[in-house]
Image (cartoon, rainbow, N blue to C red; front, top):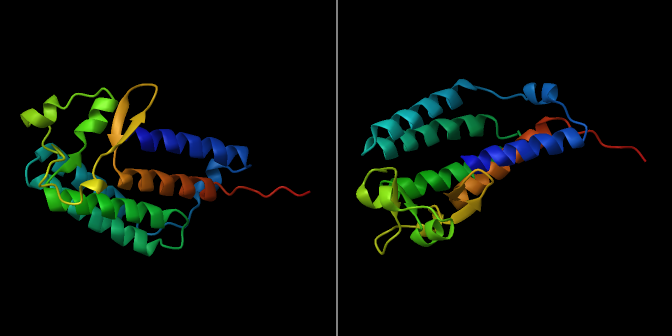
Length: 176
């Protein structure tokens, strides 16, 4: 989550630096925006409820966002967002939780205690039975406030959102 926020702030700064405006961003021709709101609600409810509801909520959320992205496939950035969300949904669906690299957690100086004790049912340490573990949370992000571990899918989502924001801000080309 922190990665996406930092990338969005950087994208806004880049959009402004290229002469874009938030007004232009607000006029993106996005269809069926309510699907994103419904997907967010399902994901939050699944995360709060935990257990089998978490992967189900994530899968249904990914389905709604997929429909939204297909409807808006002509908007720059949506392809990367779709690919990232699909990879996250796949790895969670196959494992029942997001697999996390204990090594990456150690490099980021984050504790695995909540995962090991079961206090964090949305995550599981990567082990020999983990399916497509390379799609799990393996990338440490060192941010000023705190470190976090993200998946390749999270990186794709952040990149897609950045592309959407910068392109959507309507950057103007300079004349020579």
